[in-house]
Image 1 (cartoon, one colour):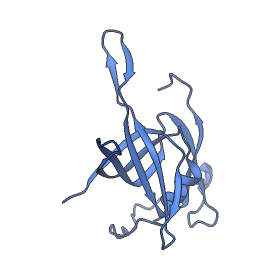
Image 2 (cartoon, rainbow, N blue to C red):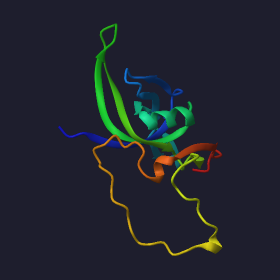
Image 3 (cartoon, rainbow, N blue to C red):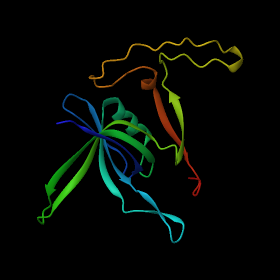
Image 4 (cartoon, rainbow, N blue to C red):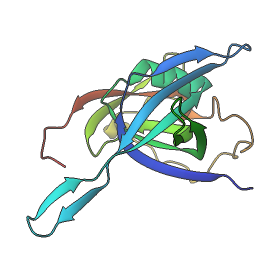
Length: 172
């Protein structure tokens, strides 16, 4: 069966929680609430619908960065593999948990500001001043193996996003 991938925006419902596997791989989980907005044509106002809740799981480097950078209430964009888990509560009710195994997590720049920070000792050269700009060759490096665990790939692997400040209300 093929995996279903989705991209969803929302807010963290709790601070990320981190644990480690027996092989010492870091796993970080957080709750995510997504509200779909709809226009009430009678009032002309945008309204939030009932939230949809997801449990988001991050592995390895993504888990480390989420744990360092995010906290409850932060607006994020999550992309990953979508699954469901059905379970029975202690009083016999059947519930469904919506889960995302994240491949990417980042700040939602529609609702917050972020400033990328380069890690020290990375392989990315700093951007030269505008007056010293040189032509950029029109080449693309070879692609990495898409079946690996996506850790440490290129310049983007050396960037962490740090939330700077929430945008003022009504600026959406």
